[in-house]
Amino acid sequence: MKFIDVIGTAIGNSFRSKLRTTLTVIAIFIGAFTLTITSAIGTGVSNYINTQVAAIGASDVLTVTKASDSSTTNSGPARYDPNKARTTAGVGAGAAPGSTIAALTQKDLDTIGASKGIRSVDASRRISPDYIEYGSNGKYELSINASGALTKADLAAGAQLSSTSSESQLLVPTTYLKNLGLGTAKEAVGKTVAIGLTDYAGASHVTTAVIVGVQNETLFGSGVGINKHLSETLNNTQSTGKPADATPSYASAVAHFDAASSSQQIASIKKALTDKGYSASTVADQIGSFETVINGIIGVLNAFAVIALIAAGFGIINTLLMSVQERTREIGLMKAMGMSGGKVYALFSTEAVFIGFLGSAIGAIVAIGVGSLISSVLATTLLSGLPGLRIMQFAPSSIAVIIGVVMLIAFLAGTLPARRAARQNPIDALRYE
Image (cartoon, one colour):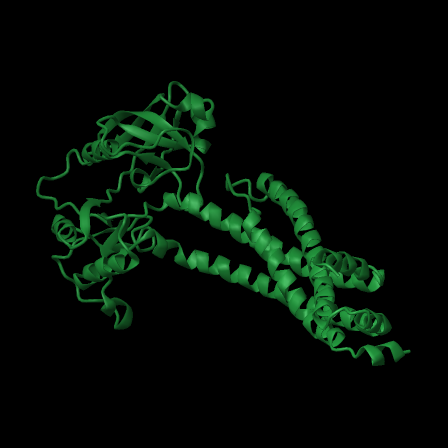
């Protein structure tokens, strides 16, 4: 019997007992369906995080703050030091927004910049504009994304901010378009808006800036992104009237390192800064706990799917053991006619693999259909506040792996019945009633 004949016979034999095979296929279907759905959720969430993670910061930067005094948390408040600079924390400063933290001074910036592995360092300035206005559409509150100049935004239209341009540039979120009367995302690009803010002495100022791009709303950050030139312009305007002897202080700083640095080199840079009394974190550090929670949830769901597949494996064993018993005389006849034990083993193993393939393929196809429908509905309802999020994304490679794993489990489950069939004595088998 040729291999192609073995496959054909195995497929035919699978449907001899339609009810038993159908129940086994359903058990496999449940496991494969669940695995495909959970895998799609993992892919969808991971892709969304990778797309939106730029809202926190670039991959080659460290957010640096003053290290907290251990005595404050372990032995009560630390003794007051009149020479220590303090400021109010903002988002991303390593403390609760609005809390008072140890601030960075110019001396700290120089120390951080001189650290091994650090290419440059920029202070994170706290800019508080009053409003943004376009034409005669009225004034609206303006929120600035402090990390906007350091990120690669998820653009709906236009271009990224330029760190070297002498032009005041900004990126506006898609949510700003309607209220400001900017039109569509493409229409907004190139338009000039007015930004109003109050200086240190209480005088009002208006600065103009050009919209170079429109960005989709992100999971980790919001607000308008501004380039370095506009940031410096607004900061200088905001500082007008500030006493000359006032010491500048910053909640945090952004330190740039070589994008090609290995994880060991990044760890070394962070340790060096820690030894100098600073706390440094990368984007991966900031979102690590979030990804851990997501991966944990998906892991639990996958565990239930594996349990279902294990149960399906026992179903395959039962199905094939019954098949071997029912076809004992047939097996004896095949061996009496010269069919080797290896071919008999291959016949029943192929039958098990086919059942596994049938259940997993149907499960994957149904999961893709149902998952795509659910994902589309959620994107326009419950998840409409997270533009760009497709909660389920089906990667062909993941589906192929799932089907392959299920077929492997089916093969292993069919090993015992296949071996029993292969070891049948032809004479005893022919006498079997």
